[in-house]
Length: 392
Image (spheres, rainbow, N blue to C red):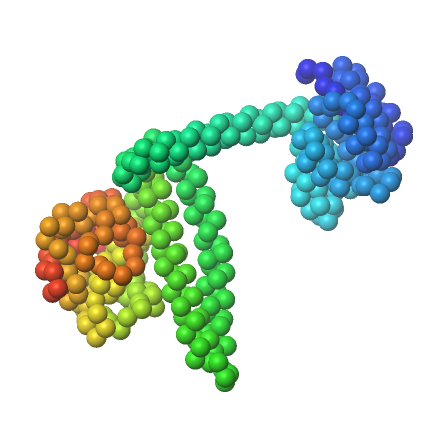
């Protein structure tokens, strides 16, 4: 292994000398020995080190953990902890400082050399990755600035973004997953508010009203994030067909219940289940995306008091369905764009939506090797016809 400049921070003088001797046998240079965090920081301010061997318990006001936090922030040098303790409390404190390694005393020379080598390797790889990330971020920033300065169309911008490829998709997936956790917490709080509103309270109606608004907004955001996650996977061809045995009646009723719970208008759903097997084998997630999106759209684009007809049956190994509404319909000139990503018809007005739902439906049906078509008259409504092969 190549020689390293090493700082030893150990309050036991004998242990420090033994460690120094062991390291010098491997041609490492010891830039100093300190018995306190304060002295270690003083040495680092005057001498450059490649790695620090850090005892957790030190003399002085700074222990090894606090000293490591300062070293991480100020010098960005890998730290290897030395300790005779391996209890869970100590390990929990240590993990918070992101150490390069942790060695339990007493240790042998071979183990120590291996730990040091791995710590240096880990540190250098992390810095290389950080450099690459910084370069990528700069490229993304510059590309975005160029796109804005040229005032290109959104579609063109999206195509340019796709050139970043798989890495960009991973970023989208990670950010979307990050949003889902706080949204779940908000949704739980809103549901708790509704429970409290069931009790006698002078602001009972207002609490219930605003809790319902919070819940609907969170469901809407959660749906949008689900759509983003879906297309993140689609862009890197990670949407697979995962068939499982499923109970049809329970599945259909769950879809209807979810749509009803998220609806903000008074629309009746007429469910008609025809001849259908008790169980089928298909991809539950893809089927859910198809029927939840189609049924949600039918309800959303209908007016209060209208009805939506949802029929589903099996025929010759094919799952067939019709979802019919009597809502705003789709303008004739725009019907050929209906399954395009981000497309929204001009007659939707102030009705909220992302323009992703039907794109998701189309993609899911393609994966399932099914078919979808529709009939629509503006002002009279729309009917979707779905056919999907299944295994009974």
